[in-house]
Image (cartoon, rainbow, N blue to C red; front, side, top):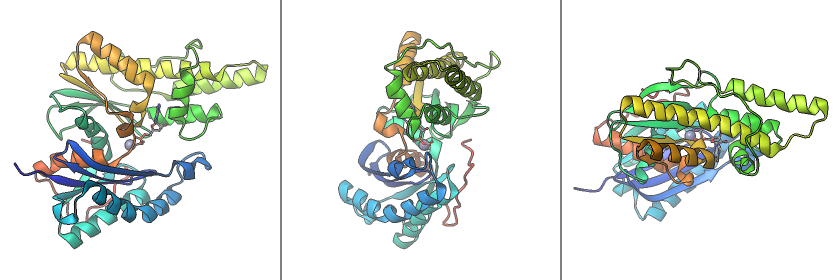
Length: 335
Ligand code: KG4
Ligand code: ZN
């Protein structure tokens, strides 16, 4: 069978990325221009600044991605672009670039859901075995996604308040750590101990939903209490205790959903999937349960265009192309 070459484009938040992927499984190039250093001084992503930065780098990055892959536009079978969810101004930059090239070079366009992309980052590691459960943990999402086949997503649980990454970033900020806070807490937690007994929020026993705002408030209250009393609280212990509470609930609900539904595989996806404690604990729990686990390398957990191209490959195979008036949807649903 002839190879399929997909050009992936991702600009939903603060990473501009363009990738070339063969057959949805092999990365020929995956260029990522991160804006983290620009947003760091503001303590978070500034949407307007993100859009301007995407405009500046999208075309040079695209040329470089094609050159590194050793392909020309005439080799590209389809352009897969993230059209939601995300920051609308940021999404529109990638989408406009994708549509312009699609039109000018007569290459079919494919619209990809950002979270589908995160899930498909796992396909670079190993092929999927259905049915499977994917735990998606990122800056904007915390979801358990049930998949019976390629491209079919059923969200069986989600967060009722903060996303995990959001909780990490807020707790990190209150500890005086820099943005993005997740990697900082990950590092600090390895030097501390889980001794502060933060709450594990399970909600109703049968629910696969999550809630992290109570935990976040508990951490902030504990920090305030300590500063009022002039008590010396180890930041490393706060980080370790917060992280332990998060990881325990995430792992527990994932394993229970896999067991109850008879999953053949567990997938971990999203920026927080780079977290070392979460990777280790989920690995341990899946091994104990006897369920195969796939985790992408840390570099493919955070936003990148290779994962968008991989998810786009499935839509390509199904002939699900997008019209040239495809719009950006900041709150696009996965199902
Ligand atoms: O998937 P992603 O790159 O962007 C979104 O789609 O949201 O995820 C970014 C989130 C941020 O909240 C960041 O703090 C978190 O992922 N993150 C981590 C780690 N690396 C990134 N959280 C915990 N531990 C990490 N090592
Ligand atoms: Zn993401």
